[in-house]
Length: 552
Image (tube, rainbow, N blue to C red):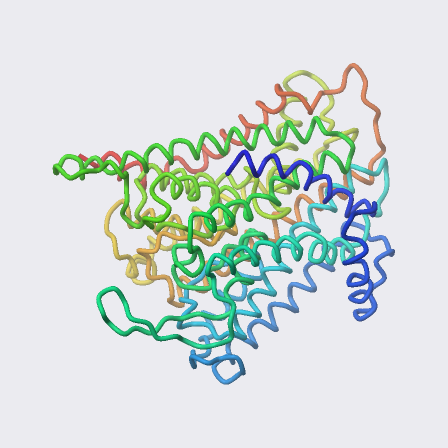
C-alpha cells in the first residue's frame, strides 16, 4: 500500500504543481468552466494578487462564515429536512465542538453518526470536509509561491488556490474513491434505517444513508470523520480488504503528493526528496514497531495458554487483522486523518505511544497542505541552528533567516506541546470534569486524556474511546484547543513565508548552507526528535510507558 501510494504520488504531485502554476492539464476542458462559473457567481476576480496578510484575512473570514452556518444547521437539524430517522438537534456545546472540529479539518467526534446526525447535517459536514482540506492546500500554495518568486510581496490569489484545490484535486479524487466504495457495498441512499435479520436470528434496524461520498472526502481530505459511530471499523464504511486498501491510499496520496508538488513548483526537486526522506524515515520508525507489536499480541494472553498467533485482536476487525490495523493506526495519526479501522484504545501500550508521538510531532506527511506548513517550521529552526554551528548566515532557498522569522517559528513549535500538556494538566487537576468521564483507571486513563488533547491539537480526530467525551468540559476545552491548534500553525508559517518572499533574493555561493542534502535532512530530523523528546517524554512516561512496564 505504501509503495503504491509513493509511486502514484510523484506524477500526482507534478499535476498539483501544474494546477497552481496555471499550466495546462488534462482536466482543464472539463473543470475549467466550473471554476469560471464559481468565480462569476461569487464575484471573485482570481487574477488579483494578494499579500500574505490578505491571504490570511480571506482564509479566516470564510472560516468564520462556515462556523456560523454550521452552528445554525447542527442546532436545528432535528426539524430541518433530510432527517428520516428523526435524529435530534445538537446541544450548544456539542454543536460548538463538532463545528470547530470539522471547520479545522480535525473531525473529532463526540457523537455517533447513526443517532446524532441527520442526512442534512451529514451533507453539511461533507461540505466542510472539502473546504477545510482546500484551506490547508491553499495555505501551503502560498508557501510554495513565496519561494518561487525572487522578491515580491504579492503571492497569488487565495480564492484561486482555494477553488482549484476543491475542483481540480479534491473533487475528482473523491469521485473516484466514492465509486470504488459504492461497488464494494458502501451505501449511497437517502432512505432511512433498514430492517435485517442478524446471525443470531434477531430483527435489527440498520442505519444507512449517503455514506460513500462522505467517506471518500473524509480520507481524500485527511479529515477522518466517520459517517457511522465506529468510523472505518463499520462494515458499511469499510466493507472489504479492497476498500481498506482504497481508503488507505486515499488518505495518503495528497500529503505525499504535496511534497513532490513543492519540488516541481519551485523547480528544486532535490529539496522535495530531502523532505520526503525525513518524513518517510519518521513514518517507518513509528509504523514498523506498531505492526510488529500488534502482530505479536499481548504477552499476558499468551501466558494464559491461549493461542495468540493472530496477534492483538482486541478492538480489531477480523477482515483486516492485526498487521493492516497496526499500519493504519500510524498512517492515520502521522497524516492527521484520524480515521480508524481498529480501536486505538485497544492497541498495545507502546503502539498507543507511537500513535501519540505521530500526532505530537505532527510533521511527518501531515494533513492536506498543513503537513508541509508544519515541517517548514522545523526547517527554519534547523537552518538557523545549522548556520550557527558552521558559522554561516542562515539562509533557505536564497532568503536570509533572521530574528523575526525565528521568533515566529519558535512560538509555533512550542505552541503545540503547550496546548497538549496544559489541556491534559487541567483535566487531571479538575477530576470532577476530566477524570470523572474515564472508563479506565491508572496509567491507561491518563493516556486517554492525553490522547484527546493531542488529537485535538494535531487536528487529528481519532481517540482512545474509553473516554466519555460528550460533556461540556470536553466539548468546550477541546474546542478551543482545536481552534488554536489549527489556525496559529497556519498563520505562523504563512507569515514567515510572506516575510521571506519580500526579502532580496541571494544567489547561492560556496558559502551557502546546502539545504537539499541528506546531511541537512538528518539535522531537521534531529531537531524534530529533540523537541518532541524534551516536550513529551515526561507525559508519555506517566501514560503508555508506565502501562507497558505494568504488563507481566
